[in-house]
Length: 187
Image 1: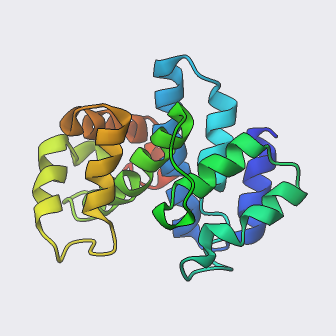
Image 2: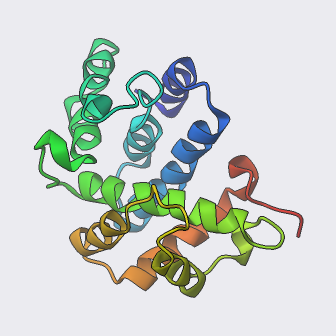
């Protein structure tokens, strides 16, 4: 499966522009790590784009991603990608073992949180976001309350990277795709 095919599946099942942009934000972070680690960028891109493809049809846990995974199998998505998608949710019982699985988990909640931080900046821009501003907002439990701080912390730990370095890396990756993410702002 290639990126274009993954985008077609994403658009077929995901009508919300915000959820599509979330997939693109996670993709930006995950593929940046693939590049850094010398991994298959296309495979990592597909995984990131499809990780929440079923959220609108299965918005209740544990249905997501468990009930969506068979639809991906029917469309020929590889076992490796489907396993990574299942592993991004702790309750599925699929342990995160591969670099792809750990990276997807580490980037998912963080990309959403960076997006939320961008929206409250004066120019609504990811270019105004840095690791200290993200860390500060993480302490505010009322801010983006649906984003799991534990998942952000555990993701960096499982990936074996310093949290501040991980945040800065993902911010940079998202800055590279700011236009597509709608996060260029008015700067």
